[in-house]
Amino acid sequence: MDLLHVLEEEFNSVDTDKDGFLNKAEIGTCLEKFGFKKERAAEFIKVFDLNKDGKISKDEFMKAAQKKIADREISCAWLRRTFRTIDKDRSGKLSAKELKDFLQSQHNFIFPSAVDQWIEDNDRDGDKELSYEEFLGFVKNIL
Image (cartoon, rainbow, N blue to C red; front, side, top):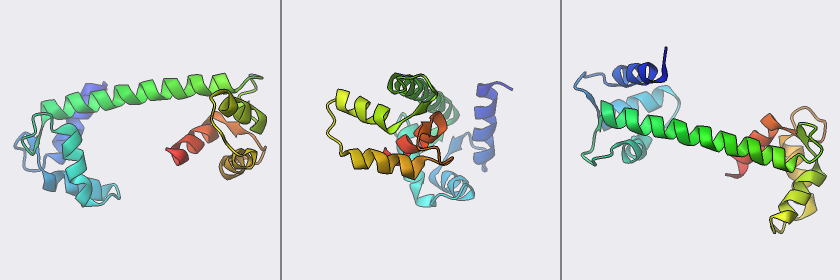
């Protein structure tokens, strides 16, 4: 099943009154199913409602969702390149020294103890280094 088909099915499942538009109530109900507050529906509408009529057409949903997915893919590629740049020894893991050296090279003043703490907080396997997955968790926490 291709992405467009999946997105269309998602739209149709949320469009409970089958009018071809998503309204605030429908979006709120959907958000609640996924554990979010229904009040966040207004934020969702702000992002997806391209013509600013207060509701989201299927076309608006498809365009905005595809853009979000493309943006995310670009972000993932950028994060992967950044990880590889920091990983000087090509071990597939970031040491405290590699992180500190990278931050210094970017002219970011950071206390060495802060980097050590970041690693400790995000190092799930206890090896005192960050794998790519652990690095993603680290980045997610600081953004």
